[in-house]
Amino acid sequence: MPRPRRRLVSTCIGSVTAGLLATGAALAAPEENRAEDSGIAMGAYLDYGPNGVARIRQLSRWLGGKDIRVGHTYLPGDQWAGIEGRVSFLEDWARWRRADDDRMFVLNVPMQARNEERVSDQQVGRLIRAGAQGLYDEHFRRLAERLVSLGVPDTVIVLGWEMNGVTYTHRCRPDPANWKVYWRRIVDVMRTVPGQKFKFDFAPNRGTDAIGWTKCYPGDDHVDIIGMDSYDQDPGQTFDDQISQPYGLQKHVDFARAHRKAISYPEWGLFRRGDNPEYVRRMLGWIEQNKPLYHTITDYCPHGVWQCKQNPQSSKVFRSALTPAVPGPVTPTPVVPTPVVPTPVVPTPVVPTPVVPTPQVPTPEVPTPQVPTPQVPTPAVPTPQVPTPAVPTPQVPTPQVPTPQVPTPQVPTPVVPTPQVPTPLPEPSTAEPSPVVPSPEVPTPVDPSPSLLEPEPEPSPEVPEPGTPSPEVPKPSPAAPSPVGPAPVTPGPAVPKPEPTPTRPLPQPQPQQPPLNSMQWCVPINFGEWLSKLVGKQSVCVKIDLGEGSGFWPF
Image (cartoon, rainbow, N blue to C red; front, top):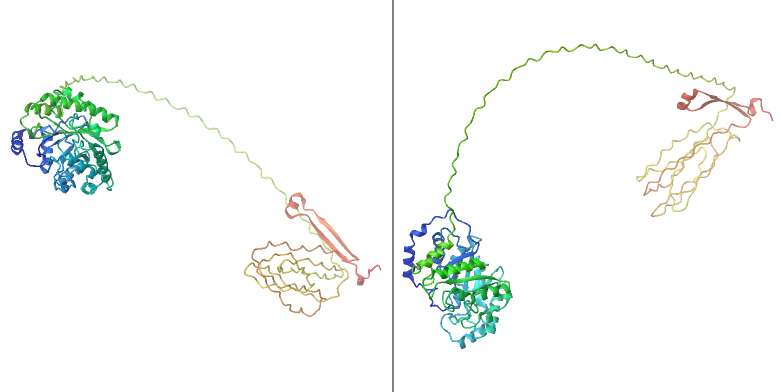
């Protein structure tokens, strides 16, 4: 709506001062016993600078402690420096906003410098086209950076407000198409600043004014809130007219609902018709019915209801509607004491309990049975009588010499043991210890008896050897026994085994056959079934040699 430049200059000082003095007593209203409100964020434009911040608390007390959640101010539009946010009062508003997470900071931002200098439509058209081409992008980038740096990145920005009117240089009518392009450029530039969370509010005047405001709508992607500034003035003689008129209050609600946007009322208040309590009552009812995101009344003369004292009836309605309901005094319910009737104590007669003697029952003695221990007879083992032969012939045992296991690469080399000649053991290997073979005793040399059987040579087991092949170990030749001690034999090289080879059982000596023309009697010994299981079956054998020199040689 058209109005002089009184938002950003110190005008109406006398009216404001008088209002503050007149309401001084009312500012001390108690803050306790608050009632819950409808949840709609409410505020008021009280001043653009620090005074506006300070008066928020005073307005809250005047309204009986109502929570004023919206702080609303304007950037000056006379120079680009003001539009860039290079004004000190932004710091005061940012501090107020940061003090409570539930608060909302609403900032009206002009789109052009010299915003209230009555610039002609022809010149406004040129400015709009320059903005659409990006000539003013840097100014709005600096504003976004300024707000983020102050800690208010979620500011609600009412950009180019009342664009359907004829007052401001950022009006839409001279070039609606480029005006929408210009709006979108500003939004895109400000959204590129890191950390921003801005919400952009598209807020025309109520009614047609110079152009139907829907023709200036820049699109859902670049609008977060659809607002409306509505004062008590034409078009519309009554509040119902303001609702139903073209581009009126109902059109605003329907349009926002169709585009799935929240609504707001950044500016509303009295104007052409003076003190009009009916308008205030109906406007507050409309707000309560349609639940905007926020609303702020313009509270200076002639629009206000608190700082402007020329609207006392409207002020009374406003205060009564927004002051939280205080619950009435609670009448305590009298406590009627209940009479205590004493209960008579009736003594309980004590009946003695007769003592019944417990009968003594003798415990019978149970004799313990004597279990005899069975006597196990020890079997008598008879000692066999072995007759001593007249002329015993010493038996020369054939020593069983284990053959050293010498691994040979892929060629098995049989090792034939030499009778009566001990084969030296290979040197111990660090890979696997070899069994220690005892050296056989060399008996007194005698003529070999033809009855002695010569043991057959046994082949050495084949042991695979990975790696470098070992030299062949020469096979020892059998030699006749000699009384002279055995000559030393050079041991073969000890070849380490990379892996342990399972030890094969040594060949068991064959039972020695009795020599020819000899007699041997064996008598089995029976120790009984029980002892035989422990010691095994035993026998005693007697051998009588009937050799050639015995005198019994039959041939």
